[in-house]
Amino acid sequence: MSTPLVVSLSGLGLRVLDQCADFAAALDSRQVPLSLLISPHPDHREARSPQSPVLHWVAERLARRDAVSLHGFARVSPGLRARLAPARLPAHEAGLRLAAASAVLEQSGLRTNTFIPPRWLGSPGTVTALQRRGFSVCADALAVRELATGRVHRARIRVLGPGERVEPWWCRALVLGVGRAARRGQLVRLALDAAELRKPGARQAVLDAIDLALHHGARPVTYASFARGSAHLGSG
Image 1 (spheres, rainbow, N blue to C red):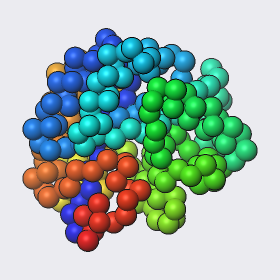
Image 2: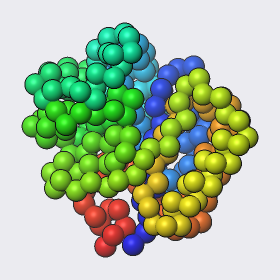
Image 3: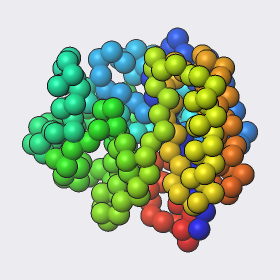
């Protein structure tokens, strides 16, 4: 059984579109699809406009092997307690937020049955709401969950988010950690914010990690692949 490798890209926007396209081309040469995380939050409205070059680029990527995932909710309150709230969200409230977020995505002509909770923190109530609304996959910080079957693929997310300092030791640790997981046959999950593509060291570290995972036989998939059963994940 080959090891699934998932690479996701968030924070899509006009200012980083060239970097996103360049990174996607680098993954194309490796036959690695991207999971494109689309946020319904008002701050990311630019990327969802029907006239936006970003949305046009996303459509082009979907014509390849890439896939879209809904990333978070349309409304997020400020403050530390509010940032942690998604991990405690009850099913009813989560259902209301999911309905609003899905509507925002559909207004952009996009549909998906995969969900990434805010800051990768999801609650049991959110999982219940996702199942009720017909979602197939929920990927949080610690696992990828097949909502129809109840199967859980445990693997922590390796995130390179906005504002993080990318030191040489961090890059080495990322590459070695990914290589070790792939060698052991463990699911490998990499998450990259588009703004970090402006940092050559961060971009190269992610590509090196991907190359090492591929060297150890990892099979590139998207989060949408988990909705289609084990055959799409290399388990026969």
